[in-house]
Length: 247
Image 1 (tube, rainbow, N blue to C red):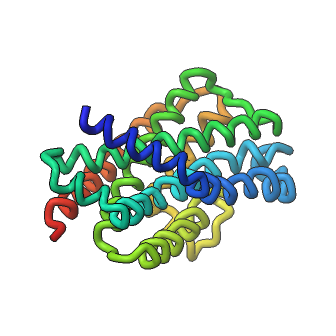
Image 2 (image 1 turned 30 degrees about the vertical axis):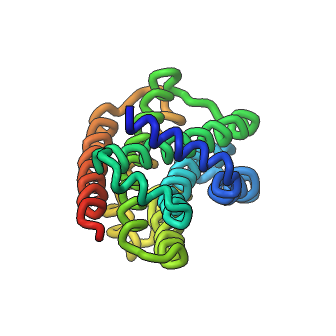
């Protein structure tokens, strides 16, 4: 119940500060509506490059919305709300979970918007309802991982500018050093190792298969779920630890 209250407080703050939604949605929309139509390529998936790049754009919106989610803490600190919650008997894990679920709501609102636009660009999910559910699961675990790290960073960096600088520095390299825009075989040899080490490469590949292929590669899906779950739990524990040791 306390987690739910924190989530609702976060959501109310979010929709009172609509710029936090618009700010994280504009760039992925530009990629979807502009770049994918400008760079149509038959090298990858016939003449629908939008369908091919949509998984990477979904991860980009996940990275931006979840990665920026820690910014709400700075507003809460200036208003004194954070300190009232901090000294209350609420479990530290509940505070972090409230932050994560707020980031998840924001992310899925933006993902839903992207899917609406994608529908008008002739993008369909080949694996149907089951594929949709698996995509939702992959995105949620990605949010869990990224939002946990974002919360920890918002506790570590004392100023909003420092937080924004580190998050902005990380988001685009993670997006580009992956299979977001091209398949692994076309990536230059010097970049193949970092692309392989990027966990979101595997998320993008799984979502891409679910959108483009009629069959489901369960080994790949389950392996990626396990990877994200492990990273998410570790990031969550770090966020809780940072919050507990905060002076």
